[in-house]
Image (spheres, rainbow, N blue to C red):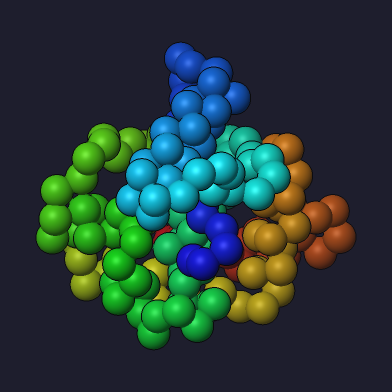
Length: 161
């Protein structure tokens, strides 16, 4: 993305603020070295949302990988080069561990085989689901909107069966 990035990270033993400070500082230094520039690489502070359920994590996971497709930067999720998806698919090495925090309940599953995962990720959200996820991600804790969410949540769970 040309104006922002998304991270889904788990920090069970560390302070998120410390991690983000280190990440933003070291990223800025690296970008400045590569570009021959100095100063800030990122505008403003980051925004975070606590995702505390397997259902919410699955939809945040898909939301992040679909972002370049929604923005018109790529036609499919696998075409976007600046993502960890190729590493998840085993197509290139990852420089960091991938951890799925919930182990997923018996009924919530992110597809594990490549074809099913890509099919799921490339399937757009329904408009009302996308709007609900966007609202939930703007809160400190991923919480769905109060009105109409129960039906939307049931529909979204059904997509993960």
